[in-house]
Length: 157
Image 1 (cartoon, rainbow, N blue to C red):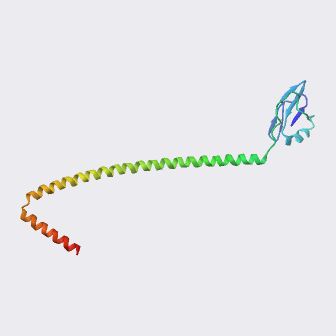
Image 2: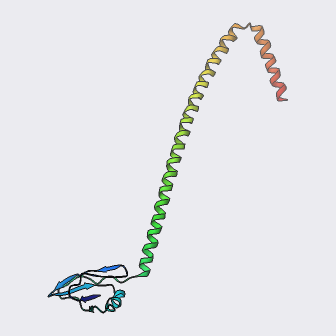
Image 3: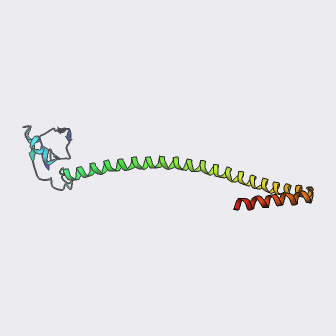
């Protein structure tokens, strides 16, 4: 709401809100004040008056307090802060999970390498067995094969 101030006003503070002149025209001082502060300003008895906006002034009135909107803004700001904290926590968890995946990948690579080494050893042992079988007399091999066959048949019964 527009008000006219007494001469030589530098400003006035009401409920920790400071109002300073918005316009000085023809020696008159004009300022805008929140509607709920106007009765307090007039009650000072210093000569403040409510007035219409000065001609040629396009400054809007000070917005009226809107508790619903202000509460919604405060709630939204709180929710936003909580969401940001959640995102930060999830980023931390994601980093930890990525580190765990890297460790598991390294272990998997080591296991694959060990499996390849063991497969190579099996091939080498197979080659050694074939070479050793060539050195064993045939009569011994026949006896060994017959014993192995009998053991297999006994196990299946």
